Image (cartoon, rainbow, N blue to C red; front, top):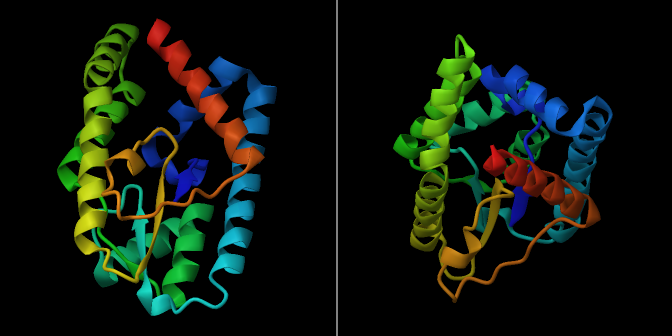
Length: 212
């Protein structure tokens, strides 16, 4: 299991908003260090996976990805497009698919669409009042939505990962999927000190956002 720290390439229409939030919370210099840590982290994950999978039969590896709502050829094309846009997460995913791993449908489309809509409403608000209302709507649904997404992902993994297979889950660092998995699925976490720093950054953003 690898935590996901999103690069700007993956943020789409809310990229500018998320950059503004990061710079407001941390200041430009620290936000720049955070973005550099994100790049460093993905390099560490890539090297770790190459070492761990060097002698593994990739036909028995299943890939579960944060935000992935479709599998098969269409799902692979989506991964290719995001990888081409600069997402290191999806570049790693694409490399594993090319080596023979199977890309799985991971998330609920309905839940993901709802979350994206709530975040986009904040980012595209026309004025402060509209932004405050959108932020309140998101805050009121955020925790339960994350809980529902985690439960859906855990059920998907439990249903599709067979005995003897290896599953690799790339999931946002604030998620709690592991606690919802059946006890017979052994979980190993990827990520070292860089991941720890990034998680601390996210925790700080969460604390500050809850005070408002």
